[in-house]
Structures are given as structure tokens and as C-alpha cells.
Amino acid sequence: GSKDGTIQEVNVSPCPTQPCQLHKGTSYSINVTFASKIESQGSKAKVYGEMLHVDIPFPIPEPDGCKSGIQCPIQKGRSYSYLNKLPVKSEYPSIKLIVKWELVDDQDQMLFCWKIPVQITS
Image (cartoon, rainbow, N blue to C red; front, side, top):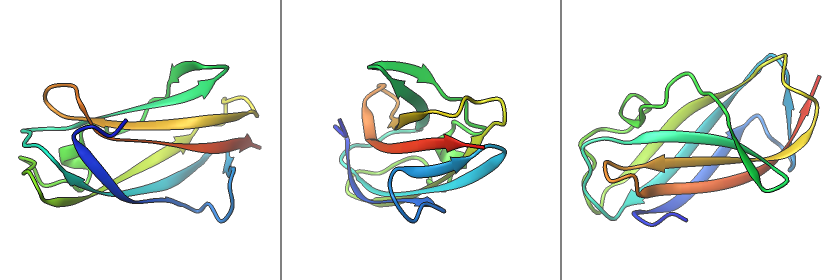
């Protein structure tokens, strides 16, 4: 689904094996390196938990990509490192699901979209 960009690398840390064991009350580091195919003034992250083919919005502290390691405006043909945190709240249920992370440009088109299987544990 990465229409306006190309993912070069995705790093979720700590996550030695998949599905990632996400412990409640812990924050995980996200680092995505991608190349942009377009120009955009800004970028915004949207994160979902995918369960039974339903996307449940997953709040993150900083949805603004320009405050998450990306130097804006985004230029065509340049590579960027997107850095963010995925906080796992203690009230989340202990379940297996897919985390879907999107970054959209000014036109609401995807710069990148990736998914990772996770297991939320106590």
C-alpha cells in the first residue's frame, strides 16, 4: 500500500522474533527508512490494530511525521528516517493482532504502510 514512497527498512525494537511480544506498560521504538516518490509539505501517521479484518485506531503520542525525524517539506527522490514510539497501555487486552502503521502525505496518499504481527502480554 506504499503508493507515494518505497520502504527500505522497518525496525521495531525490542522485537527479536515475530510475532513481537509487546509487554503492557512498555514503549517500543519504531524506525522506518523510506524513499519518497512525491513532494509533500507534511506527513501524518495513522496506526491501527487489525483484528478479524477490522481496523481499530491505536493512539500514538506524536502523529506528526515532521516531528518524528522527517525533515519537512518532503522532497521527491530523498530518503527519510521516520522515528516514533508505540506505547502499549496496561489496559490493553492480552491478544494477538496485526499492527498496521501508515504514514500519509498532504493528499492523504500513503508514503508507507507496513504490518507486523504482535502478541500483547502482561
